[in-house]
Amino acid sequence: MAVCEFYQSAELGSLTSEFGIHQLGLSLERHFYTAPEVYERDLEKIWGQSWIWVGHASQIPDVGDYFLFNFGNESVILVRDKNGEIRAHLNVCRHRGSRVCLEQAGNKRSLVCPYHAWTYNLDGTLRGGRLMPEGFDRKEHGLLPVKLIDFQGLLFVCLSQNPPPIETALKQLTPMTKPFGFENMKIAHQQSYPVQANWKLAIENYLECYHCAPSHLEYSKSHSLKDEASMTPELMEAMHKRSLEVGLPVDELRSSGEEAGQVGTDVFYRRYPLYPGYLTGSKNGEGVAPLLGDLTGYAGGATDVSVGGLNFFLAYCDHVVGYRFIPTGLQTTDIQTVWMVRADAEEGKDYNLNELTWLWDVTTKDDERIIRHNQEGVNSFHYKPGPLSEMEWGIVHFHQTYFGMMG
Ligand code: FES
Ligand SMILES: [Fe+2]
View 1 (cartoon, rainbow, N blue to C red):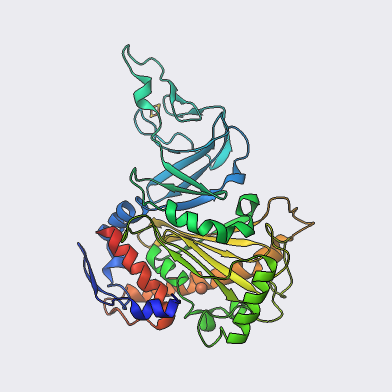
View 2: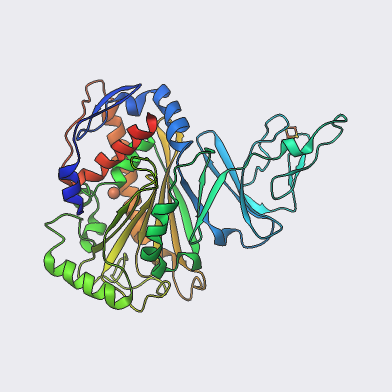
């Protein structure tokens, strides 16, 4: 189903939560962006129960390599254990709750709590607790495990022990993303762009390109704006032809998990055209890194991939930009932008960081500004939910997922 058909067929009724009714097709009521009790529930029901993209397996190639992923009140340790398996543990000591790892990344032979020195193996089991009384059961006090999926090298965690069953949808996504060779990538650069706004405003902004023409001059010069006016039949046909020639699927995929109506299990894949003269998302239209995976050339398009409602990727033929919108407070969010290239590409020789990051650096800075101003306006007592345009269909879908998870 094409996106516009989806928008038209969506039942634009109302959705209910403990925080009131939301009329689909409008922006949310003010308190969803301003009330501490809604934010608390967001952390518990949305962030605490969703799959969250945290990084790439290539960040921890060796035994003992680890990095932390933090959001809201939570911190997760991603570590490669003695058997070479990647594990995810909650970064909360089972003695009296201290953070166990304090540095953002590194290499450790074991995980030692800095408070009273309880020592955990890399697989999370407790090796020893000093001077604990006889009868103390180490087996009962390992670090709490966090659910983990390694999808083509992309690592997703979920803090719930009953995570959304996304595996079926990921299986359907597998052949679509395979040609990009995600498992054979590395992170070339990542950057945080803090914005003074509620996380939902940041995601809603990412989900629509209604703002692209007025707010993103650089992006709009090179990318069609995902609307009928700019995705002309000629551009679409040329992109499809080139995509098939270089080995990329052209069909749109919109799929969800095992159980009908299960929220937080959606995956999405869609190609859209770049304008003639642009091979990739770059300043001058030239390629910025070696071609990814099995691709045999540039295809004149870009690919939107999303996984589970909170995780977004934009794949070009020579690099991928990943996006997260991490809540750090009621009205503070980290926009985390991650640039990935082929694992064997060398900086300075095969790619130049300034050229690689130019487009999504200027574009994310634009986004920081417009999202911040959005929050300032929404904070007014006189703000009222306004009607969404057809180009904002992605927000309608986000609201359905959001209310579905909030119960
Ligand atoms: S809180 Fe970790 S050892 Fe005491
Ligand atoms: Fe934007």
